[in-house]
Image 1: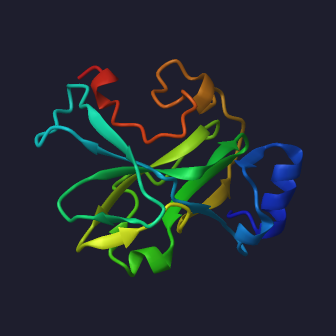
Image 2: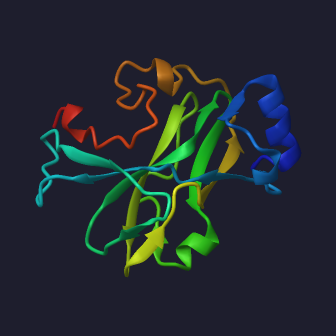
Image 3: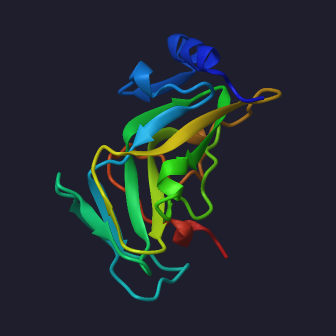
Length: 178
């Protein structure tokens, strides 16, 4: 089941959901709007290698916006830091963002119970689009779980995205053994 606005507020009061900063005006009927942080990154190499630590170049968007170009993968980040301890968070693009031709995640829309961090966004566009720091970019939807979680994400030894950072984080696929 998806949490309603009342259940999300209750979970925040109990501490099982953390959203920093929290603004009640961003709470929808069954979601919470998150915003695009000023930090972006792009990969340095033209060819990415899944077995290699692909380096990124980070930069700060100016307040008057930045034009995203088709054919590149931009790594963005939410302004909001979040924690979820008893629910599964799903990050979905806002419909207004989708109607601009902006995809905010390639495959990673679901978080794990115990995810505690800013969300890195895998942004791509179909045509040039100007974006701005602080613009609404996505919404978090929280799903109830059935049963107890044995090992929450933030305590899992193999978790690769646990270092708290307000910057986009590149792929850590290279840490897997394959």
